[in-house]
Amino acid sequence: MADANNGNWRTARRWQDLLAGAARVRITKAWPDDASASDELMLALHARRSAQAIAAWADAHPGLGLAVVLTGTDLYQDIASDAAAQRSLALAQRLVVLQECGPQGLPAQHRTKARVIFQSTPAQPPLSKDSGVLDVVMVGHLRAVKSPQTLFAAARLLCRETDIRIAHIGDAMTEPTLAHAARATEADCPAYHWLGPLPHEATLARIRAAHVLVHTSSIEGGAHAIMEAVRCGTPVLASRISGNVGMLGVDYAGYFPHGDALALAALLRECRAGQRGQDPGGGLLVRLAAQCALRAPLFDAAAERVALLNLIRELESPR
Image (cartoon, rainbow, N blue to C red; front, side):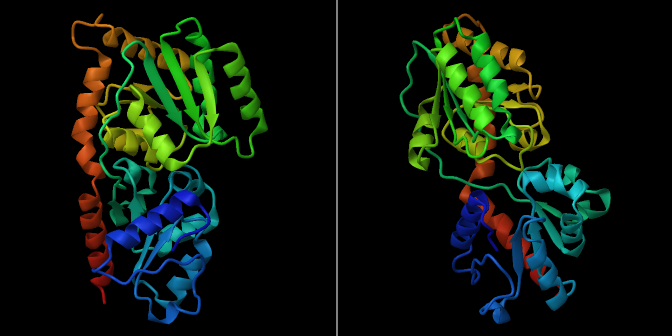
């Protein structure tokens, strides 16, 4: 089922498309409903927000046909303290996580239920890039969990370096303090630009044209922006948190400690130095691009479809 979260809704629609021809899939915001009598399996998105529907399914079909898909706030926040989310874990036969470190975030007694299903997005060719500057893009709403303050602080540290240009895409939503901080950073740092929310295609074009994507979050279940960057050949600099390591790999060279603006600024300077030819090893950007290319097949639609079909077979097996 899908709830009101846009990311969850997109996942539900993509899975419906991927399973076309193999299963009849319907998307609903509440269960049971008028069409629920013929339902055989449930894939519930979000342990806490879908807790009522999960409990209703478990009452109607005890011990059968239920998988719960866990978001970042499920894994790294709610299941530690929220009773409804904890009950969802106990009721499910399978727990779906969206990156390979996800099972480690589960209580030990539930880890055998975990299945990793990487989300997918089409591969895109990169767009032409301006070699005279390092174009940096960050995609993320101005929310505390996305830690935009790290980008603001890094922009100020790089304020005198006009050959590093930073574009920040995201809505201020309900965080006026962060919006004020973004505007202040833009006023003080000519190379930083807060673009606000953009349509998906425009956002993707910015990612494809950038030399590097920055991702500063404190909590992630499997960031769509990272996946899109990898699939279009744009290297990533990311906070070293479980959700990002699970996307990019343990040995990825582009991590900085969460909240460490000095470390992020240093990595951006290193990327720019390599771009200028000042790194005889080819530069950090080249190394990151090679590592991202190795991860890119994980985010292919065919791989996601196979993982979904395997999940459905497992859910059907007790029947």
